[in-house]
Image 1 (cartoon, rainbow, N blue to C red):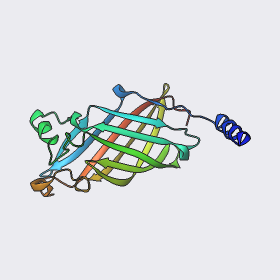
Image 2 (spheres, rainbow, N blue to C red):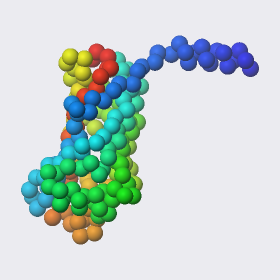
Image 3 (cartoon, helix red, strand yellow):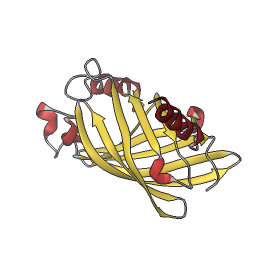
Image 4 (cartoon, helix red, strand yellow):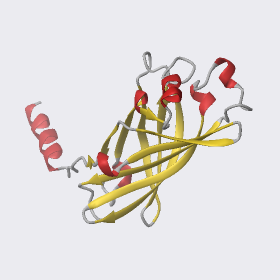
Amino acid sequence: MKPLLFAALAVALSAPAFAEQKLLPAQSEVAFTSRQMGVPVDGKFRTFNAQVAFDPKKPEAAKIGITIDLASVSLGAPESEAELVKQPWFDTKKFPQASFQSTSVKATGAGKFDVAGKLAIKGNARDVVVPVTLAQAGGVTTASGTFVLKRLDFKIGEGEWADTSMVANDVQVKFKLALSGVGPL
């Protein structure tokens, strides 16, 4: 029994470890555009975090987790921000965070990846595939991308706000995550 334990320990210690990269918040952004009565409304989240373990040479082994503080929403209009944290929208008292956890990463071209995972908002989780482009400069790797989510899939805008003629169901999410510690592409 002990030789088996030592063999497992030796394999674990000899396996290549890849360091978790660090998010550079001042150079990062999570933003969105919704449409209210046909007019684009831009917003962003001021507080979010990412836990990333990514080796560009082995993307299939990546682990990516993102959490967003929903109460940190910014629209540039305090009265609208006060409404978004309430129950029909984000309900931040009950659901303070949105999260994404990767389940797989697949290279799709030079510096391009499809990141599949679970997006959870307001207690509702959905499978999503997010196209991500990586760029490197000066020791910083920037992961950027855009995808569309259906707000009603996550119960964002319930009751009278579920009317998509007032607020469109499609919300475009845009992100730029600056990371340190990623190996060369």
